[in-house]
Image (cartoon, rainbow, N blue to C red):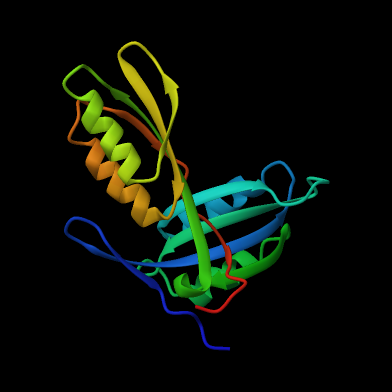
Length: 177
């Protein structure tokens, strides 16, 4: 089986090449630190990292790592991960064969002049308002990284918003595109 093509995304000025790795590990203290340490020692750049228990027993966790394909060859990264004792399985997910999602939460100040524009941005992004205060709203979007990027750019036009993104999680698609 050939290695998947890296994702080519674009920021405002620099093209990025990413690989998505889904790594199943034993859910034990220090495993995430060892995985992150491996990347740091080898000079591999992690673009996004998300981790959570992968089963009801919480015996295993799944780490989704989006890695900069320019920082090291993919086979070298997978080989180094495979050497770690607590790593159970490593899957390289091609972006066109993966279902990716990310969570964005943002608190946006709103006033009489900006409330309608914020509501419009939320509606156009298929996002939701999950909390309302007297002078701000908290917006949530669980969607593709591209949709989160677009909403983030729209929210930048308002007064400084507090914003947090989880990083990507991904699983193989069940259906062909």
